[in-house]
Figure 1 (cartoon, rainbow, N blue to C red):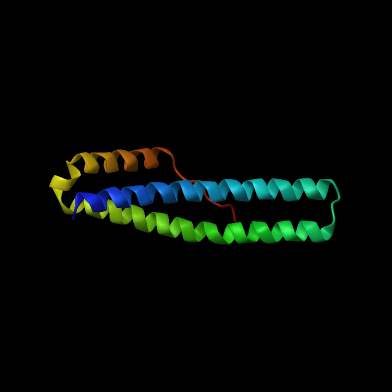
Figure 2 (figure 1 turned 90 degrees about the horizontal axis):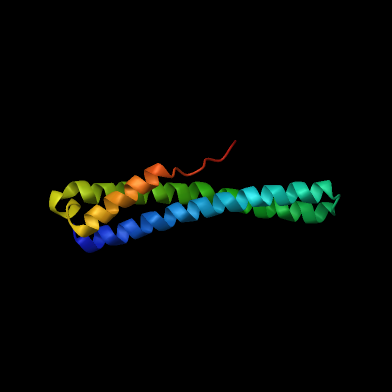
Amino acid sequence: MSLREIKIKAGATKRLHKEHASYFKEAEHQKARIQRMKDENKDEYDIKKQYDVLDDTLKIIPDVWKRYEQSRGQLEALLNADPANADSPEGREAKELLDLLDATPLPKLEK
């Protein structure tokens, strides 16, 4: 496997990690918005539309999680496939990224 592939896969894994966290944050924000609208006795139609937005966000999160896990697994496989690549600057950066991602776990949705 080439060093370029490691660099690309590391970038994709990092992006998907960020994307998952962003969607999760958006879902939490949307839940708070809905609660605030209920507390202010806003129009039921507007509240329903906000639930639709929340539902769309919640549907995306499992897909992003799946793609993140897949990308991370592929990156780990690339690093394990050839020890020379793992010792390269790109390989060391990818290992550091994986360590950082392990230190900052992604939130899970409550069911």
